[in-house]
Length: 387
Image (tube, rainbow, N blue to C red; front, side, top):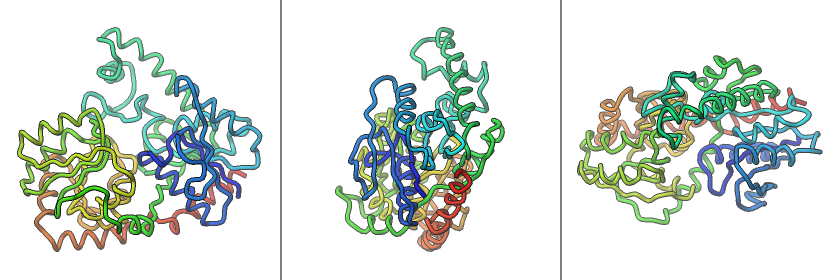
């Protein structure tokens, strides 16, 4: 089949959504399909031996990027199009044949204007006039009630996204957690197919030494230093665990300085490395005593957790969203219901070598459920249904 993947986020510099799109592209190519990528993300046009068309877009992203994707797809009616994120979905569905388009939903963009479902440091139950008057606080640079003027625009934007998604030939949620909220929003033709992780590639990359020094034993956090990723919970959880291990942080964000202050005040040895290449992320992940995953938002299906499975890294994670669809508690990771339980899970992982070994084996076995061999046929069945 001829398959075009569209995405506004794509490697070499990308988060989990971009690397998940790449994993799918490579798996489809290795299965014998003619695969190309259209993206607005900068980089090489021959990445991994794939044809990657890099669109140059000027103007406000929310409007300019969908138009650019729509224009790029004109005249390619023979291909099945698979949009990987929100703006690429809007552009891909604007053409004459939206019924030939599949859309993967990797976060909360069809049900939350900010895509996080976080409001004032806590999960937001739903959109509506009163909840949205809370969530604009801190997002819109104007005091209430002036900030409330953004609400009509936000509601129209969400309605537009849902109408566009209703035209798709197939909508693929990456987890049952995401599927549940899409069903509640009335999204039709919905299936659940998780992201792919190639354990062989992850292990090959992780085998090389990282480009920066690491402690002999350490705890690891990977991700944006933002509220939704639980950055404010990270240092307190490590301090409460009282294991004496340094904490290595790979990521950037608005809460970086707050983490440094908290670590100094609570006696946590902190190594902040900022943004790291994917190779270094995997190399650190493969060497960590434990991954600490304090995510606050309803995690769709974390790529960090999938790669931790692939490398057999013991993990202590908050029980949010689709996390239990990746980690089986006490078998492939430890899942915690609150901050105190997260600290206890970190303590157990630091001191119990037999537990770590058991979780390493369970994680590698669990990773098979997200392998190309397990998932490519399911994607192929979707594409055939769109032809």
